Image (tube, rainbow over the protein chains, first blue to last red):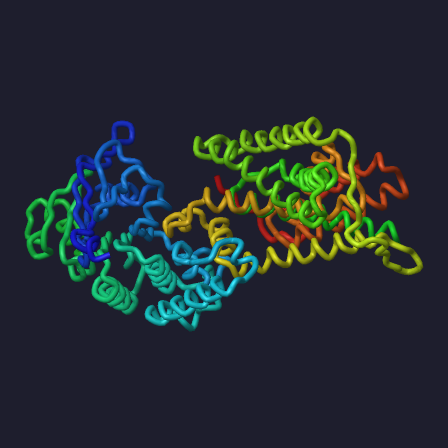
Amino acid sequence: MTASRVGGGLTAQGLTKSYGGVHALVGVDLTIPERTIVGLIGPNGAGKSTLLKALCGFVTPDSGSVTLGATTLSGLAPAQIARRGLVTTFQHATPISGLSVLDNILVGMTEQHAGGLFTALFGTPAYRASERQQRDRAYELLRSFGLERLAGLDAGGLSFGQLRLLEIARAVAARPRLLLLDEPAAGLNRVEIDAMVTAIRSLRDEHGMGVLVVDHDVPFVFGISNRITAMNFGRVIAEGPPAQVERDSAVRSAYLAVEVEGGNG
Amino acid sequence: MTILAIGIATGFVYALVAVGYSLIYRTTGIVNFAQGAFVMVGGMATYWLYQEHHLPYPLAAAGGVLIAGAVGGVLWVALVSPLWRRNSPAVVVILATLVFGDLVANCVAKGISADPQTLPPWIHGFRVQVGGASIDGQYVIVIAIALASIIGVAVALRRSNIGRAMRACAANTQTSQLLGIAPRRVGAAAMVFTAALAGLAGVVFTPAQYTDYNSALNYGIYGFVAATIGSFGDLWGALLGGILLGVVTALTGRYISTNYELVIAFAILLVLLVLRPQGLLGRRAAVHHT
């Protein structure tokens, strides 16, 4: 564990993906050191979504490599990538409907459960101990995300803000080393965004995770991130601390200027 | 009264097959027509271990269940998993299960016996008096074992980690994958488990009647109709569908002709498909996953 913490971050090198004639990714490099929040910005169509899907395994890049610490993730299936410590939540809130809020969290913990099918069927003491331990941890997580009152409800019935928090709590339940969050603040009001900022900071500071935040809300991303990567037309156009990227002329013309115009209009 | 009891017991066997159809469909999106072959394998493998290899009866019965589960594992590893990996159309996978079931039936006919075989009752001389009629106690044992199995499945789906993974995979495959739950591993577990469950149905039902390699197709069809009656994918619907179908076919066999049992079953299926395609207990269309 100690060894993997040294240089346990994510390194993507030369990721390229084309759809027909459209170059969605062109030689993209991305580094997410551990215990670091990296913000990924870029206008619509810049390639952010394709990059996320390439990292979590839903898209196979034409070339390039992805490693997490010493583990190569390229070529693995989404579930294998998740089991190796890279967990992703996507823009559209996706409750596992029909399961309670508590069960949603427990599903996130499936990999850490000591029990198998047969121990579960016969309810062995070891299985029951593992189950009890998981439930305790699940309640603890729900408490830290302010969701414990909702534990017994069907996850399909939550409000949008509650769902976003549940998704992140469920992702944390899987004990990732790196969490990719696709537009975690989209559709949230100011109070909910503040709760989200606190939650994401605690992932880094208390759970020791690296986090990639992809979002359109520029003040939110720049406020929360240690480093920023900016993309346009499938390429990385700037990378560095927020203050530096904010001054970058390519970024200003590609993205921030558009935002400012949009804000005035 | 006797005919009703036989109908209900047969219905419970159909229900176990229907539960298999439902679980596989919910977790993988595949309709597994080999489900009926597992029932037959359970009965015939137990006969083979008990009569030809002279194993003690309880051991032979346990062996029958395990062999049925193993045949399910073979189906998964040899056919479904490779086809799935290649993104084959659902109809190809479904056809593959149908052919596999037929292949298994033929292997049993050649390798074990082509004749109908039966097994001793679990409790000798056990008969139950219901309303003046004396019913073979084995039918009561069938009902008890099947009911306990279905309740066990329901509890396991709610309370166990694998059950939760199956339900999660059925409800939202993509999110489950992002949490590290591989649909293929869940599918493999569901296949082996439901094959063993169908095998158990064959093991406990064979002493009440008989089993031969041909019965694979019958169990497959009746189980499919039962699953459809009760809304494909719903556990209690499968039970209700199985019992309804068991009773209706038993009454048909008794008062009309056994030749019409299948006709009536298909008639029920067609009427339901037109009038209530979501099944008796279904509230919405089943979710598709490929």
